[in-house]
Length: 205
Ligand SMILES: [Zn+2]
Image (cartoon, rainbow, N blue to C red):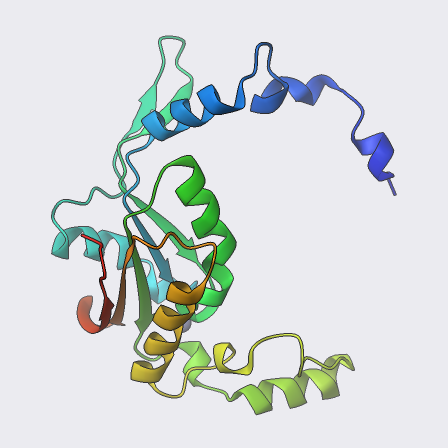
């Protein structure tokens, strides 16, 4: 094991860390990041490989959005930005609870105007119940998950309620900017079509 103290000593890898670069200025760095990527929309969806089309399909129904866009290079050929306006957050079931930290950081570095929560038809998280998962983990791993995760975020039993829960969770989170529009869509994995189920646009697009 490397102790925290040892792991923090300066080494050759510091050359790859922005905050360790000569003349580093946090505020200027943030402006540079903001200019590097025109992020507008975060889309949260499931890691199921059948859901992989979701950000592409979103850019079709929201024609102002660009996904995946093109990388931007500097004169030395280093990758310094992108033209994309969509950042995907890919997590089990596309549940908002797993996306909160990434939304906060996306807002800080680039700015976020819209958040799309996309749950999909025949999701694996609709194949079990929260109780069934907790019981199985107890039996198979000997660990108690009953207080580890919010129970409603473990499994999906009803799409209107799962999407409403996630939109409400995002709206109530201190780490989500108050001005974002929040959209809950059901994505049909067989037709690649979206159905808007919940919309919370106090501001938004
Ligand atoms: Zn899924």
